[in-house]
Image 1 (cartoon, helix red, strand yellow):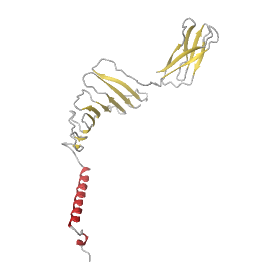
Image 2 (image 1 turned 180 degrees about the vertical axis):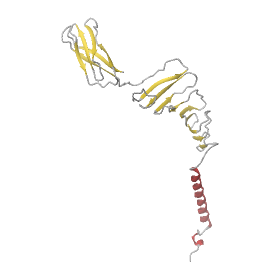
Image 3 (image 1 turned 90 degrees about the horizontal axis):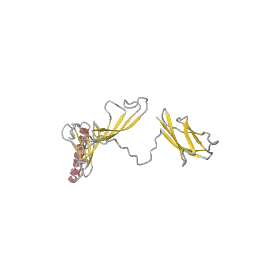
Image 4 (image 1 turned 90 degrees about the vertical axis):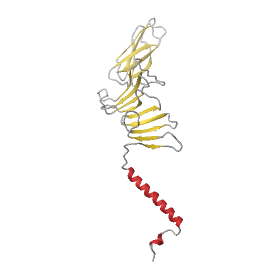
Length: 252
């Protein structure tokens, strides 16, 4: 009849290996059970690559940035840059560079439905913001429309520069040109522009004749009925030469 001893490995080496594997599995099981209830009140949890002196990541109840807040921080391999996640938001910086205002992304306290992206400030100058708010946020205009605002604050006095390196395509502006052939000399003649979708609640326009003889042959240009969908362009000249008139409709 088989006994318990018959279930053991036949040689001591195999028995030792199995015991070592069993001990390792028991340690891992205990560690996993403890991890679900781990509380770090002092010290930190660090992730450090082999041979590295700067931790890739640190989680601590106080990250030592002067705020007294706990959080999670990752650092570039050379230790020069970091990203820090705390209750105040997500901030970015360079090691050894003290900023009077942190670069980062935060939610506006008490506002809800909003996000504030800040450039940060090294000294006492100004910083740029991109503020985004949902239509029902207290920071929105109040008519249910969402908002994106470019603004600056700080002690500097220079105006903020917004440099668009590509093509700006605002939905509240439309532009183009029409060629109008006067019906008779000195007779105001019009052409209607339609099919626009200019955003806004009120509209105005600007028109200008592409002419080398303004005031001499082209005696007047104008517009009427500027709306979100189009406008009527007028030209008057002393003859019936076809005239190109440039137009622009702006909604506000």
